[in-house]
Image (cartoon, rainbow, N blue to C red; front, top):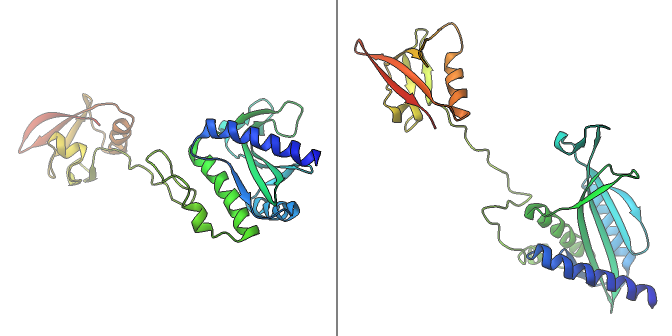
Length: 249
C-alpha cells in the first residue's frame, strides 16, 4: 500500500499547484477503473495516434514527446528542435485511477542539457485537458460531449483545437485594378484609397514625390508600404487637374 499512497500524494500535490497556476483547467481526471494498465494502454494509443513518442515509462508515470518543427523553438547552435512533452501520472485510489498531466516545452530533449518550461497558454492547456477526457471516455465510457461541456467556454483569447483560425485580412490601398498608364479602374468600397478621396478614373502620376514608373509593380509597392504602417503620398489627375492625398492605415 505504500507505493500507491506515495503516488497518490504526488498527484494531489501536483493537482493543487496546477489548479492554482492554471485555474480553469484541472489537468487531471478520475477514471472509473482500478485497472491502471487499461488507462495506460488507452493513453498510449491516443498519444501515439497524435504523433507523440514515449520518452519515459515507469510504473506510475509515462511521458510523451512530440518535436516542434518551428525555427523559433530550435537550438540555433545544435540545430535541434524543441519538443512538447506531456508527463502523465497514473495513481490508483479507492477503485478509481487518477490521471493527471504536466505539459512542458523542452529544449534539447533527450540530452543531458534539457531545459523544461511549463506550458501556460490556455489553448494548449485545453488540448491536454481534452486528451485526458478522451482517455476517460475510452476506458469507462463517459460520453465525451458530457466531459467537454465542463470546460470553460471559448473566449476571445482562446480558440479550440478544432476551430480554424481565420487569418486577418491585410490592409492595402484598396485599389484593385489600374490601367497601363496608371488610371484607377476599380476601387474597393470603404478602402484606404476611397476614404482618402480617390475614385475610378483618377490617374496616379506621383508616389512620394517621385513620378510613377508604370513598367514596374508600383501598386504592389504602395500596398506593401501601407501594410507596414507607412504613409504614402499620392498625386493624381482628375479632370486635367492634379491633387494630393495621403494613404495610410
